[in-house]
Amino acid sequence: MDEQKKQPESSRHAEPASPPPGREPGPGAVKRHRGRTIALIVAVVLIAGFVLMRWHPWNKSADGASAATGASGAQAGRAGRRGGGPGGGMNQPQPVHVAAATQGEMPVVLNALGTVTPLANVTVRTQLSGTLQTVAFQEGQMVKRGDLLAQVDPRPYQISLANAEGTLAKDMALLQTARLDLKRYQTLLSQDSIASQQVDTQASLVKQYEGQVKADQANIDTFKLDLTYARITAPVSGRVGLRQVDAGNYVTPSDTNGVVVITQLQPISVIFTTFEDNLPAILKQLHTGQKMSVTAYDRSNTTSLEAGYLETLDNQIDTTTGTVKLRATFQNNGGLLFPNQFVNTRLLVNVVKDAVIVPTSSVLNGSMGAFVYVVKPDNTVTVRTVKVGPVDGERTSIASGLQVGERVVIDGSDRLKEGAKITIPADRPRGASGASGASGAHAASGASGAVGASGARRHKHASQTSAE
Image (cartoon, rainbow, N blue to C red):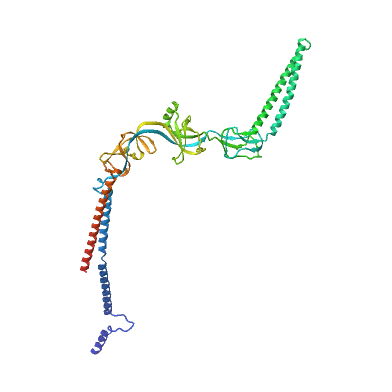
């Protein structure tokens, strides 16, 4: 019995060593598998650690930080050269351009937008009906008053004139006979041979014939006038436009388009507007009888087209815009002004004598109003509030706040403030040498900094190599 019990126990201990196929492994095999897995993981970790030690990314971040520090230092150095660095910007002179205030005449000019308007724009129409025989003008031709433009067939009106002249001759003969009879009747009446009633009747007949003769003469004058109207002539001098009818057409006085349109170009006018606030100064000059000159410029307001004079102004102010219309006349000998052309006008109202004049670019505007930067003898600037007078393009007059001869900044004022140091073109060589010295010192300091940084990186890399 004991041997039988021992045999199963020994068989149970021997079975796990070599399990038969199809059965699961025992606990010992599982432990050995886990051990190999852990060893593999440890080996991977060690290899990764070794790679990280060789790459040392933390050194790269340190180098990047040092590079960023160097870049910020370079930017600070450049800012210092521009005058924006702390401590050095206030003492760094700023290059500017200056101009001296002069004394002279300043015109008071009113700028306005205008439209070229002809003094006469006539649509030529026929005065009678008929067939248009000929057209005697070329499109775009310059014509004078009285020149022939077109011819209407005159034959019907010539026939009517001849008929009226025949009627007049007949009535003139009857009138003459009636007058002779009246004279005889008056002689017989004086001899008391006929009744006075017969004399009165004959006298009335003479008056009737006289009235008929006048009517016939009026008919003759009417047909003569029709023959005049058959020749269509230019009522004004100017430039003809495109013809509206051709030869052979039947024209009537009711034609709305007419035969042609004539526009007067010489002289010509420009109508422009100005604000009602400028009206007192304009009326003052007109009431004294002084002619105010007006200059017309092109759309870009750069090229002068023609010079003329202010002719008149409208009789009322437009309440919707607060402006009044003015008319200026120009001889337009060169033909540069064309009807309905858009132009810029400059009306000279007055001239200010002995005005203080500075370039317009020197006058700035701020919360305190208009001001300029005045240059002191020690090449520093100060802010000066001024009162601006009339402005004429690139020139501005100063009513108060500036004296003749004082220098003002005209370019580079955006970098200035009260008490800032400046350099003017005459001082540019000294400023240039100082700038080169500053740039050389900055380059030297940058180079030394770069060498120091590279040395530090080499020392750090050597230390890490030795540590490895």
